[in-house]
Length: 355
Image (cartoon, rainbow, N blue to C red; front, side):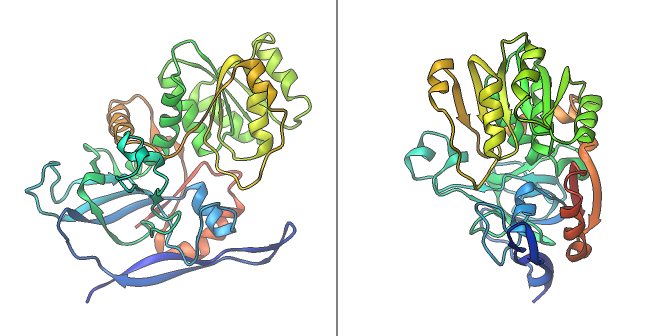
């Protein structure tokens, strides 16, 4: 039987307080190359993106992590084996991305069409389902999307863009809306890009001046807020908005303090969308929700339509998605790369592995 290499996080970092006492163990392990089964295709992996959830799994900070885990769900590859007599028009040699979210299809939520937030959701590399950091994967045909000629190095970024785009659509962002994105990491950056695509006036807040400057320059933001002091944050918001607040606020960090930032920054009858995933509970003065008549949404994963719309939008030149990439590693270097990626996570926007 033929073997393939996979990246595996065998154990997480261990901490005593804030002091790391044991580093995470990342290994290259071998598995059998999957065989073609009905309704599936075999895809040779070309690129895999590093998500915040993968970093969280390494650190032991991700809510849905288990060990050992093969991470990875940001993906681009080439179909190498498939029954070409399929209803999706998929063929051998196509460069594709995949929808990494698996749902039960039987529950009340799925039957209403909200498959992205099925109670039994299994995202590749994030829970009980293995991820895509493998040389080959087998995927159901209905979860494979043609990149329509997109460079695979760009196509690998469609999934994280979908996370942000889904949230922006959920908020029904319209031209002229004044939008604040709290968090200038990859998902926040791409939420800003998605809101700009829909005609919003976009501002961004973060604790890192370099990230803010990069976002302002590359996205053409209306302005930024250096969020270095929560006590003065409302004053900074008021100065920008003449005291009115923002129409829509996106939380893309996952901390109680950044959720509070959004509550403070939202206008009356404003909208807040929480994208960030955290593990810490929050204590806040909840009557402000009623007082402001806030509309608060959680946004999870994305839908097929988000993938298709963004593939078309990026191919049409509406956003240069490749500009998000900060660094590229060979996948065989993953055991040495992960500590570097984690150490530099405050500087890098998006890191990818080349397979």
